[in-house]
Length: 256
Image (cartoon, rainbow, N blue to C red; front, side, top):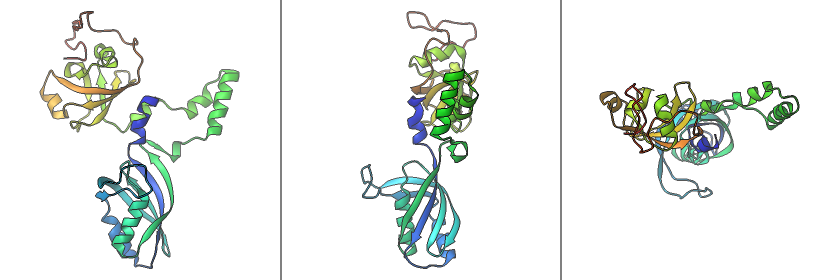
């Protein structure tokens, strides 16, 4: 599953952030200004950052004020990956006219993973030790979740059995190889490819939107970007010449 960890780390995030104002100000004004930062914002990374300092557009999904104590404002922020919280605090302080900086920060969610399902390294160590010494898997199953969970927030594509192996080998997924897909898919979206049994095949980039897939019965719909399933689990559906065999269901293969 290390092949898709990059997707998880670049997905939606949530933080608890403590912002320190530099002057006293009315609560209502703080609330009004913070609400202005929900949505798409312009942000230039701070001087101490590991990326090029160019102006970028980032999306803030929600900002909730948990508590205000004198000049300290405790916030819960949900944002697009790559959004700098310390720069957000500085910008809020600039609009308020008081000045502000980020005092403390804790990430509480990345993609589908949050603090509620987090485990410690000690728990993992104990689970591995029990498995190696007794062969019991009960603790392992409590601390290690299936890789399919990492893509639960993505739109899903169920791939026909006859198309799975060709997709694993790098072929684009064509419309005849699709058994089911979610509505609301746009061109360029990253989606999860699953077998009919719910096994994760990998990630793919949408070459068509949902409406285009509905209106056509052929054509390339998704281009695989990351494959996690091993080869050889599902049968091949093509001849050695590269042409797909007709399995009788009219949906052989994932190519054209």
